[in-house]
Amino acid sequence: MLLVIVEHDRGVLVEAAKEALTFGRALAATMGEDLEAALIGSDDVDLVAAAGEYGAETVHTCTHDLLVDYGPDAHGAVIAQMVEELEPAAVLACGSDRGNEFMAHAAARLDVPFVANCVAVTPGDSWSMTRVQWGGSLLEDVTLDAEVPLLTCGLHAVAAEAGEAGAGDAESFDVELDDTVTVTMVKDRVVLEAGVTLPTAPVVCGGGRGVGSADGFAPLEELAALLNGRVGCSRAVTNNGWRPHSDQVGQTGTRIAPEIYIASGISGAIQHWVGAMASKHILAINTDREANMVTKADWAVIGDLHEVIPAIIDEVKARRG
Amino acid sequence: MRILCCVKRVPAPGAKINVTADEQDVDAAHLGFTTSPHEECAVEGAVQLTEEHGGEVTVMTLGTSDAEEQLRYAVSVGAHHAVLVDAGDNTWDPQRTATALTAAIRDAEAAHGSDGTAEPFDLILFGNESADSGGFQVGVRVAHALGRPIVQGIKGIEIGDDTVTARREIDGGFEVYELPRPAVLGVKEGLNLPRYPTMKGRLASKKVEIGSVGATADAGGQARLRLHRPEEAVSETVILGTGPEAAAAVVDVLDELGVL
Image (cartoon, rainbow over all chains, first blue to last red):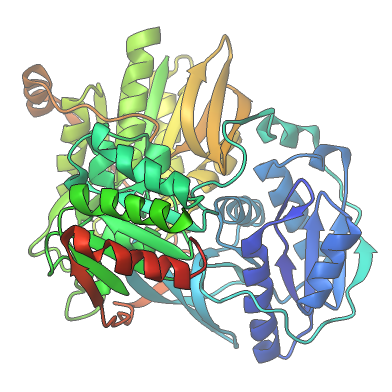
């Protein structure tokens, strides 16, 4: 049996969890094993049903007083116990911040290897896999010698797709947790902005060094607001202090996946590109026709963003009357 | 307050990362080297905390003697002590790295203690993941081996009486964690904006004596076969126009995509 840890946040399914189930369904088929799922800290019927729709035969639900909110060590402890009691052939989660974190905790507790951000996995007597390095600019083929492989699949390694549904039978898993796991449990949450955020925005208006200053972002803000989008930026911009780091798109910033990424004055260094490459469409605005961002874009406008963006704003307003 | 920062020397990539002919490493012939970005912020964060609360910062790396460059850089921006855990080469897997670092940390803590009692670092900072291999686990493994709590993804640190409060960015806000010390944190770029070295710092970095300790640890279960570049998506870029006159064509595209 292949066990997929289905990530959720206080009962809300995380999008990447669907990718992990999709990735896991194909892997389980290759292994000739059943796909089973685990929900840590929830037995919500909708979550169980979702895991079933994506092919899980059994959904192990695990609720406990110490699992009411996210805690990496608590999650790691649950997964370690599941490995020991359910004896899965392998365990998979999505390569989100939390997924990579709790799988590392489980691996540390079990003293087994953990391979993060796989994009292809070949099971067998000896497992091998291809995994992401440098945030996606390089790939590494590795072999794995492990009693039970613990893996995450890289974000957007596959597109989430419900396939042949599994039985989706919920089964309660009794866990024993030590109070020490509460030490790393979320104590408080602060919401700074409601609504559309950078990772979920359908439109991202990104600015790079070419924007020239903090004030230079005002037209990008206006365009983003008009399109129900968000402003993003390159690392050069945050290093100059023009934008907060939370706006940074890239390997060490946020991964975006909008319907369209409008990248203005961004050369497209590899560290930025890996954060933007999951965008469904890219439109580059740049004075340099040979810039990486221009050559990788679906569409480009060659010109000064300080002239082009106000013209786009005017055109959007004019069409809306 | 004694803080340890574990850092990694990584190639500073340009627009493209090439692989060596034997496919075992990044071809660094035309690249400089730098400290992995998350860890550069870890050093800055540690220095800021000791400026506020007093104390000293030790920086540690596992790698070859070339990594002394990154240790000295950390001293030039305010770290006080530097330790090289000499691995001899750069091929160590995450489990092996964690085992060797754990041993080196135990040694450093024992050396600082007295009467046979080790004195733990109040805080150990790792980068959330290294910029190159991105294994997302060395800090977590070290924390478990030392029996200390760790939370990853940290972009804000405050020191309490015997706690450390850490902020982690989530979509649309942040989570707050409160850990008893000694604790370990995996930090992310954005924790701060690292300073540049001062002249005084540069002099200190030249003079600092770098402690070197040997490293022995068994290989873990993950072994590299080869590195390769992903297939690049070839895009036939459609040029919509030049300058502001292209605005109408841009808005046509937005309309077509249904985002207008």
